[in-house]
Image (cartoon, rainbow, N blue to C red):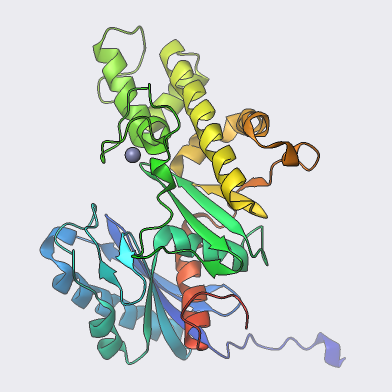
Length: 332
Ligand SMILES: [Zn+2]
C-alpha cells in the first residue's frame, strides 16, 4: 500500500526571478524543476527613472517571495538591454530611457538579502531553452526572437556568449537585403530587423499603402493585421509576408552556418503570425543552408516555453551563478 502514498511536493531550493521589459516588470518564484510557484507584474514606467523602478521591483519581488512560501537562495534578473552581465549596468538601452550607466543589482541585493545576478533577456531565453525547453541539454544553441525587434541569445560550448561589453547577440542587425527599404532604428541598410521584424512589416505596409498600393490594410496597420490580411488573400499583405519569410530564412541560414548549433529556437510575436507558414519557412531555410544540412535537415524549432522563457532563464542564471560559476557554464 505504501507505493500509493503520494508524497507532498518538496522544493529544497527555489529562485527569485524578474523580467524587466519596456512595458512591464514581472516577478516570479521558480522551483528548481522550472515550475513557477508565484508570479506578479507591474508596469515598468521606465521614464520615472531606474531608482523608482528598483524600489517598485523590490516590493514586487518581496510579495512573490512571500506568496511562493519556500526559501529562495538567489535572485536572477532578465532584462531588456544592452546590459553588462558582470554588474547589471545598462549601456544605452533604447527602451529604458535614462537608465544608461546605472544598475539595480546592488540595491536589490541589499533589499532582498540574496545575491542578485543580471542577464540580457534573449541570452537568458537561450539558457532557458537548454534547461527547460525542447532542446534540453544542448550545449550549442541559438535562440532568435522575432518580434517588434529581432535579437538572439547564444549558448556556445555550454557558455553564454555575451561579448566584451554585454552587446553580443544583435542578430537583428545582420545585413540580409541591403537594397531593400529598411525600418531599422539603428539605420543599417537591409538588416534582418529592418526588413523582417514586426516593426518592418507594419512600416512597410503603411508606406506602401500611402504610396497607393491596393490593399485592405488601413493606415495604422500593425504586423498582426498584416498576417491576418495575408491569410484573407490581400495581395500586398501576402507579398510582405512572403518577403518576411525569405529574409528570415536568409538570416537563420547564416546563423546556422556561423554557430553550428544543436538547435536554433524561434520565438516572438512574428513567429506566432507565421505559424501557418512554418513549413514554407523551414523549406526556405533548408534551401539557403549549407550542404551539411542536406541529410539531417536544419535543426530549427519553435519555442515551447512561451512568455515564461526569460523568467526560467533568470532562474537558470541564478542557479548556476550561485553555485559558484558566474560565467555561464552549464556544468554542475
Ligand atoms: Zn539594423
